[in-house]
Length: 193
Image (cartoon, rainbow, N blue to C red; front, side, top):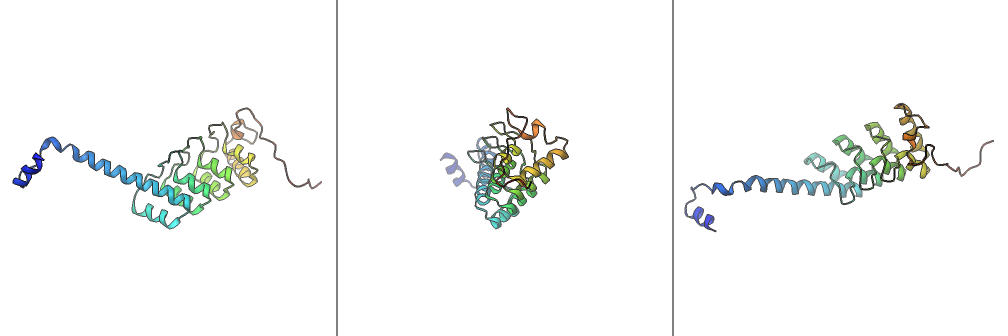
């Protein structure tokens, strides 16, 4: 209050230099709060599939693309899980991290494999997502695809593994902690022979 009285009495008197150190701190706090709000909005809109809002936010601001919620999930993970391919494409083009892992160790590619999001899996692989990362249970995206019988994603991941010199029988490809072979896939149709 003494500072206010002093500056009110003499508006030309400079502010107390002992308090000037607070200005950069306050500016940084406001900027961080704004970035957190933008990251939260980005996650919410990606999860809901609100393409235009994601596009607007990416055009107007530079949100933290990899801001995670309490479970470690990012906007990219939510977009993949929800099957919002256009948002996945926008986030990848904006520079979202391909291999960020949530608290369960899952990447966006793990989620694409689990939920059968073929287009998202293709976009992630083309962007350079690491297909051999293991989640907290020691499972790779290929293992998750096999587990859920996602034939199109299984093939895509095997092609990616072969292209990188990690053949279809590679332990790093299947990703079970105690298996070098994939789990058996039971076909629902009879054999053609």
